[in-house]
Image (cartoon, rainbow, N blue to C red; front, side, top):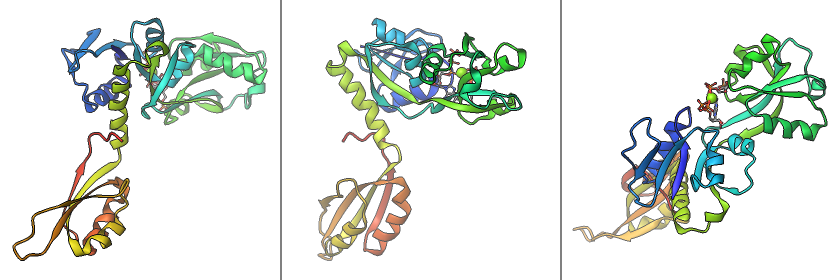
Length: 286
Ligand SMILES: Nc1ncnc2c1ncn2[C@@H]1O[C@H](COP(=O)(O)OP(=O)(O)OP(=O)(O)O)[C@@H](O)[C@H]1O
Ligand SMILES: O=P(O)(O)OC[C@H]1O[C@H](OP(=O)(O)OP(=O)(O)O)[C@H](O)[C@@H]1O
Ligand SMILES: [Mg+2]
């Protein structure tokens, strides 16, 4: 089974990092290689351009792909399905025009020219509005085109807004909201290995923002402690050997949202817990 992942650009590192955290450690994956093996002999990683990945999966060069939703939409592939929103690479595709120009709405683009790296998405966007500008495909530096009379407006990616601002462009409308997705070719979605990879990646996402809390609690204080733990499906309670003084103690483990850790520690401590440990969670398979 092959997974196509971005070979460079801003999605490369976070994608490799996610595979590693999911337990799919890459082997012999030196820079500039086209393929890397993983610890799982049945899983190979194929490095490709972010924009080419949907096509690779659709054509069968790979079975799974990881790339931006914008790229999947642009590729217009009809035999792949999304399996997971990996929630990084968040950005928006926007229609933008010079700040001091006369384009303030989509209607102002009738008979004008729009430059973009995403001609298909742009075409679909305008088809819905009934306005039909000329669409010019460029392969980069799109923000420059309105300043060199190549275009009146652009459809391009923005996240912080810095690039638009630097080029004195203002957002006219939102076209698409994107993040990185795991997707697969429809004819292989039932294969067990596809499910295994999806579960491994999803378990990393599930664990993000969660902490594992462990503590000792005198048995007669257990209810008080249990009441203040906002655990996922309730805490796990384990007997531990009785203390020398005959007092009975239990170990309490719980998965807690990291935003609640500070408050929970204060509360369980005053409810009688001691020896409180907080650890990170690598993966959480629900
Ligand atoms: N500023 C951004 N913030 C968040 N995500 C982004 C941003 N720019 C691009 N992306 C996401 O990353 C994907 C790939 O963009 P990136 O710039 O890494 O590669 P590229 O420029 O298409 O690649 P190449 O260098 O091979 O031409 C985009 O399709 C989008 O999903
Ligand atoms: O809103 P911002 O945070 O400024 O991000 C937007 C910019 O990010 C992307 O370019 P990238 O940095 O990937 O460079 P590239 O043109 O070489 O792909 C995109 O093409 C925009 O130009
Ligand atoms: Mg880019």
